[in-house]
Image (cartoon, rainbow, N blue to C red):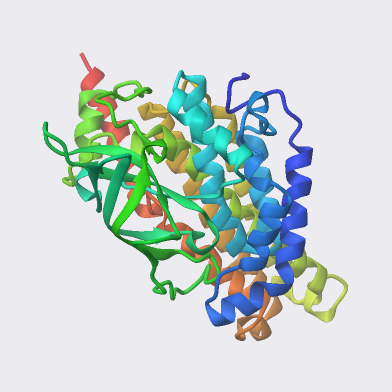
Length: 403
């Protein structure tokens, strides 16, 4: 298979680093959940152990991990602290996407990858499936650009250095999108304290406001009228369905989305796997295990967690350098992500039903895990929207190929 997403690199090192980050972050997870504060200790561990280097190609000084290694590492972190894992997943998928772009001849992505290693920068990522929804304007000035606008839901913002985001460049030929490494700290930048959510409360998924914040030329990508990497075109009928009335034809076919969702989904699967093991350990050999429903609920957990891991394994295997950006890969990504998230939620719900009311109390690891896992349904596309999208696609494919 090979390629950037499937390199011949042992993932064991990445998993061990992930486990250590999870171990160091775990003692503080409940505190940050209760207070709604950022997982600073988890990010201290991320920087100390150079987790940010894992997906950078080896010839640029990184570890060269591909999709499998990054997914397994994210799941390992989530076993200790789901908020830390979700936040740093934004860095992981941004870097792996840049590694794929670099392998496709993108020298601008290479420059960013070098900085990840040489400067130790940590990224967040905030994108949109709809070009019309870009919320940052970039004004050309000497030496760079001034950014004005606001980005919502920037996970890991308090602990990252830059957010990789689309911006609308205003030039003589009219506005068009570019990519910027927007600063998260400094003059003209405000991280708003507005992340007060049901779960993943320590992930620092704040909004960031830019008021003429300066971005040097080296932090602006694709400012020329070109796109270095163009995904394969989708059939006309599929594009029509993908628009959804929102002006985003093919938006769900973005290569970056096909890399990001397996990595993000792994967070929820790692969290659920830890809860599964904890629940079985607490119930086995006790009077609770004699309850007639105990076998059924444990069987539900076994079934769902295996389905989730199988979905991840199949998704990783079918996500290749060549498949990114295709309609077929979009279906694979959305269906795989849907199963991973729903399996995680169902596993945790069964664990709570098995162990009873104590798991529902505020401060319980089970209660926190269920709230955290439910964040998974909000990543694009939501479970029911996934069924509509892939269902329409299957109907359109047959209709457009029928003689």
